[in-house]
Amino acid sequence: MFAPKRRLWAGALALIACLAVHPRRAAAEAACAIRSAQELVACALERHPDLAVAAEAEARDRTLPEIARQRPNPELDSRILGGKSADDSLVTTETTLFTVWELGGKRRSRVAAAQAQGRAAQAETLAVRERVLLETVLALHRLRQIRSELAHIEETLAVFGKILRLYRARPFLTPEQEVSLASFELAGEDYKLRKSRLTQDKFNLLGALRIATRHPLEDIARLLPPAPRRWPAIDGAAPEGTGRNAALQRAEAAREEAETQARLARSEAWPDLRIGPTLETESLSDATKTTGGLHFALPLPVLNRNAGGRAYAQAEKIRAESALAAERGKQAVDRESWLSRYRAARKALAQTPSPTALGPRHAQVEAFFEKGLVPSTLVIEVHRQINEVAQTYHEQELAALEALWRLYILEGRAFAEKI
Image (cartoon, rainbow, N blue to C red; front, side, top):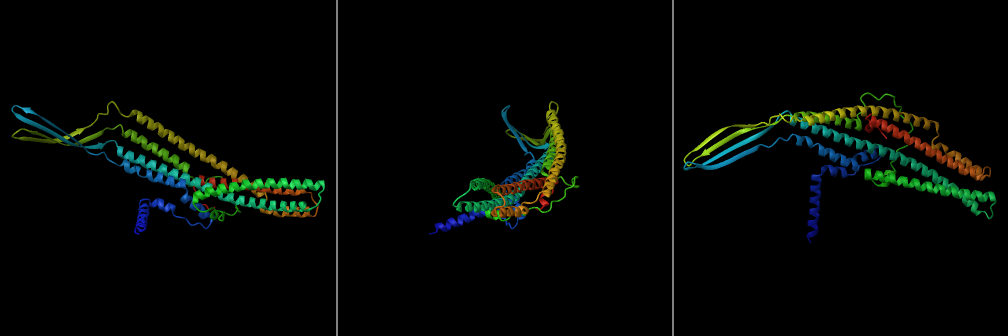
């Protein structure tokens, strides 16, 4: 009778212990409320599995300075000798307590190197956050586009179905009408294949967002962002004080770590001093003699001055400085490239009517067809062209969005922008 209660209490205690031991993981598992596309993006930045792994790696590397601050343990050196002196027994003991002193600033250099490694882990976490942000924003906008394209395909299939029913209801068809019937049937099959491909793309994107946010697919599908109405103007020169993106921070952390490793290599040329009090006793059968003093040991830096380690560390420092300069130059070129793509896409979008503006045109053609004023080929061609214009418009819109958000990332202000 009490077994279920015992199991219930055991489960509750295990849950409490888990939350106490892993508060970070418990907080990450808590559901985040989403009421808009912006909150959906924030949820992905909070709950994406890759970010959880990066955060744990960053937390791990934050313990490195504590490891570097550790001092060597003291050493206890002792020996006991026994023998004969004339007719007496002789026992001699010598005990020394050594303390190890690291010379040359070894400990300070180790701590600085560990802190630089921690900053590199922070840059890696930021890189994951930038990637998750870009992928989430583009996925949400692409889902909106797919919804629009699917609606157009559904409308087209409905029109074609209506026309096919009219043809099939007739007892007799002329050769021209037979060809029109076959054309509408083939066109309908083509649109069904397009619908299947778009549906697969939709569920692939929804699945990726489901992994990122851990929210049901229907919640994600109803929170898609609106189409951009105004595109921000981006200046040719980067704003002052920007550029603190993950790639640059990673290169700066690598240079800083190389500098600390060079200082550590120079400090390794210094020996460690072992010094401490010593106590010596000499015992005969009738008396004990005790003496004390100071004992130290210092390796002589004659044969080994860590020349190879210092040369390697200096070469790595030079390489890291070159890598940082190259990264800055690369980012300047990348910004120019993405800015050119953004401006070209904006220009193309300004010169192309949006898919919603093309709706009345195919309705007019369908009305002409029902009156017998235009052939079936024109109806099929108009729908095909509207579908292709919508696809091309969406491609340019997505290209502009990617270029815009990559510019935000390069300028280090992506997380302050709204979707």
